[in-house]
Image (cartoon, rainbow, N blue to C red; front, side, top):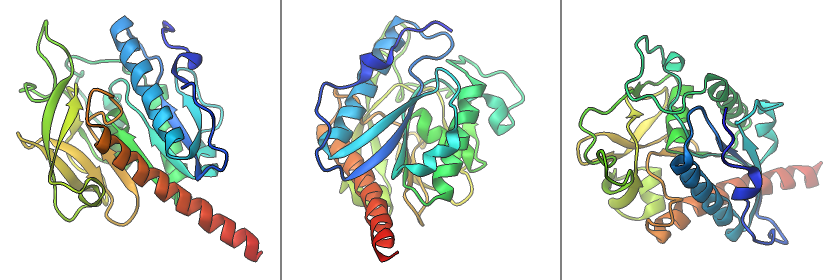
Length: 268
């Protein structure tokens, strides 16, 4: 695999919070099969913004890069929360897709399996889990759901040949969902550039947001903080307020885990 993005490329030049609210695991695919210079630029920019946002909100983080195999994905349970960032397509075999994926992009089955192991460990430990783009799709497949392998009418979701990949997409947020309570609105403009999306929902999940054509753009578990958005709030070309609200909700949930653990420890 060609290495185009290095760890030092994505670490923001910010001091760590002196009194962290939470310590979170950030799972990212800094490199994946077929990555080109354009992809690498997006990965670098988005990852750096995500990490900087966590820091600005008072959280420390440890970056797990699935460019190489993770030593112990189950150690995700040792953090206060798990954040999964974007990357390539989920291997179709993970959701029993027998045919080849049209327009397949960055498929890496080993990275998928590492991500599923980290998700399972974090969820079993009661940690909040937040997934963005590929991360949201992984959350759905981890619960037994499926994906649309290639959206036929992609106009709303990414640019056409010769056009910028990312578009500003209107997305409807469903009332009564955790996502609606976080964003405080029934519509956002999301930065999108995806050709896949959630199809059949995984066990215990509900749709939290939809595109104007009905494509699922957000999923969640109503019973716990297990939330995925298809768009990229960590793209600084999108609304800053939406990014801060989403990341702050995740950090706040992770901080509650830390506080509960501290209370139990003090009682012991």
